[in-house]
Image (tube, rainbow, N blue to C red; front, side):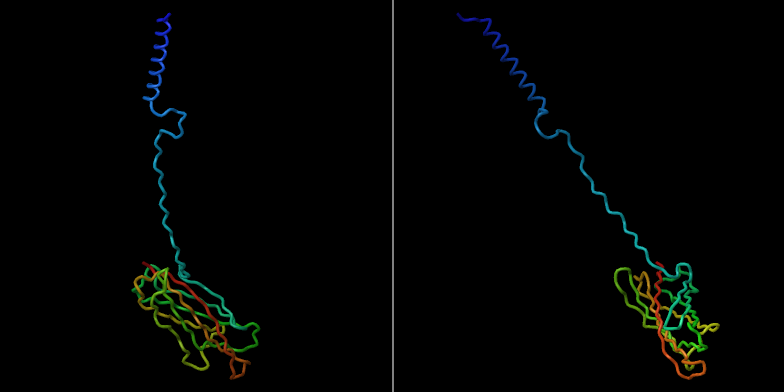
Length: 204
């Protein structure tokens, strides 16, 4: 015998199950499916910070002092410029003064003379070398040279000419050619050499 009540119950249950499946499908991707439905924010790459390049300047305080040695000769050297550092532009004539005095260790009474001082200038823009002026020198006009043993001293001003407009600094290599008297009464001399280097920033 056909049971109409059981059939209606079965049809009703099937209808409810179908509606439930359709409802779940309409709600989007179910939570057990991998992946996230939320959109992620685009990532941004921070821009690199600007690099600050420090330019060395041995005359930043207006002057600098050095102590050099050449055998038994000691030199006390002072460098300075009468032109303010903010005026040390590429186009300007730039005075660089040098003052030095010598001493002996041990000191047996001999004299010390400066026969020649030379300055070789190198110019850079911070990345590569630029055209440089010709070497500058001061040759003693008396024989055997300029007496520099304390309390005597030597002072001279070198003038650096106009440079390439892209210049950011100059390096000056100094060579001091010295003559040491062999004995206090001798006309014989021993040659000694002292070197030094200073770097000066070029104002923009």
